[in-house]
Image (tube, rainbow over all chains, first blue to last red):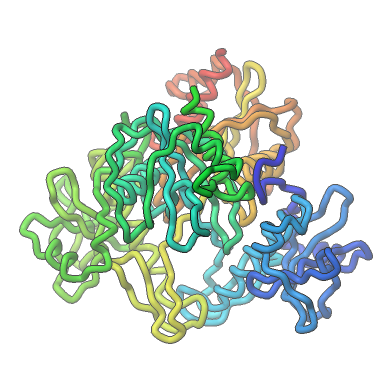
Length: 287
Length: 287
């Protein structure tokens, strides 16, 4: 059952062939091959479907894997003539089936990594794509670099029969959702959850549980979805971190999820793990 | 309750002062300040304790936070005269209390990030440490870079009354432990667990649960500890990935944890989350 965007994993990633250029080339030359064509966070998309045409033979491609029909998928830069649609629009407007959206997300995170890691962070020399896109090697200092995924904790906070939701200034007006923040070196998931909740709203947490996780390709995060029980209810909001936050009872949360709240307040979009966490919080506060 | 190394979080990291150089300088000038002195994975340590002397005023320092007594902690490069001990030895030989080990781990991951990210990966120019060590800024292309943490899935696999444990060639002889692997862009935690287990031993998993997490400062991983129930028992081992793997019943696992196995087989060391996962698997297969 798919609960949110990017949860399906439709590809066998075939990690064991990445370092075998002949096998990768065989897939690339397959008559059934598909290419996800990308320019930053824009995806080649026209006529209601992905533009999956092959780039010219010199264009480096990232091997994404093979789908259930055996069709190989690659990611590559879009060509100048491609019609482009932001990945976020493809998600929000439901323009792609869930499996295709996952394939595009994988490609987008990897293409972004190459775009933002063209040079060796250790010595500054230009590095080279290897292993069908899963490694960059520095010819000057011999360092190997691997794709980066940034773990983020995202958490619903509950206390008795209420849940805490907050909002960022940049969000759509009237949307309230879960708190979140990037993990730091040296933290457990639980430590990061406690730190972020205390920093943003001044609450200490007792019990913390894991709920679910979601890759978030804007550009390459791993959202680790948690739920925590607050020790008390008094908020000390850091307005540099969030716009505001408040407690909601079950009736309000239900209306925010259903988009029937009388003041027009809403939860996040259902694509986001935040929506699933808000629903989980609702179940818990209903008891 | 501390279950494994690096689980305690003894510092208030004070993220809100990192971008305020005067406040950071005040902490640095405190008479009670402590410095974790590092050279790669080696820690300044002498006479049974950390060498926490201040570097000269020009040495850049990373602000780690303040402990429960209000003492500020920083990390900085070791000086040439420091006596050095590997962080792994401090852990394995129990040379530091758990809280101090966590502080050193945080420092080691951050110092490693600066050592390995001196240049901007986007444009190749030399970048500058900012925010007391939590950001590097590129003066040429204006990119901001943030510390990297690599999520790793590590999982016990069980089926009926047995658990699967494997070994890497590089491990101590006779040690069997949980499977593990780096997460990739576009994966949920559960997808990564399924992929790694299938790649390494050919098993498909049914239910997967989260158990615990551990920061692993060798150099900067986040171990996400999971337990999965295999759909069947037939192993197809990829010997390029692991040396071997096999099923163990509860009696054997108990002896491996206790280091009383007649063939000398052992579980991992108790410092590692793998030990905790192995224990969790034992509880589950005992029912």
